Image 1 (cartoon, rainbow, N blue to C red):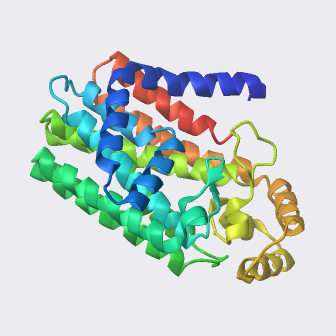
Image 2 (cartoon, one colour):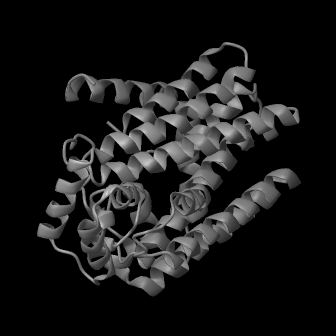
Length: 337
């Protein structure tokens, strides 16, 4: 796997390559987001400006811009507007997520609900979604409107499904995949498909990019969930254990439960039924994770989805844009190491 420094350089390079290729448009996406979030209501304006300052990878916007470029879209600013729209959908779901999970910190800064409370955070999240629908209508394309409206509904259903199975230690792997497919992969798929819609591509191109985005999203979420239990890797600046402390049952826990002895299964059941879990309890779970080589099992499964994503791009001719999107698949896969 190489050294941590080598890995970090590879990851940064693969992500930066795509970002640099659309950097001029990404600046305009940021400006669009700022203009759409401005409000005459002081509290709304204050909260949205704070949210913008917290930053983020803007990965979904990059996927929209990158797929548009791959499909030959060059005239107009619809890609910029819809990249901003996709990012706002994502931002709204994060605000609602933090309320549901009682999240206190995101990207190293206090969450909106931690500062202004749950009620304000929910309403501002709704405000973002309202702005998104305005932008969809402004775009004027019925296919885009249907796609992003459907995606918003899927994300909400994924949230409810996750809530329904909260603390369910014997959750089926199939159920977990349904949850992350709705919560995460659906927006990745929409972001990449938008690029082909803007360019009026045939259905096989649209399907290929949608399939690419979905499998990229599945890999990305599996990687994120795995990082939360990876005590060997701390280069991403992410505090490990958040999912454990919130009682979320993710792929590492599902696979651990499958491999555990009966006594260990009972211990895990008790842990995830509790309202709160301690640092010592987390350490004990990490030991079990290491015992059964769960991290390896997780990224082996992630590799399956990333291969599907990469292979779906074979329909396109060789180009810099294709190479960049395939490079992004490596970025998602290597996050699991």
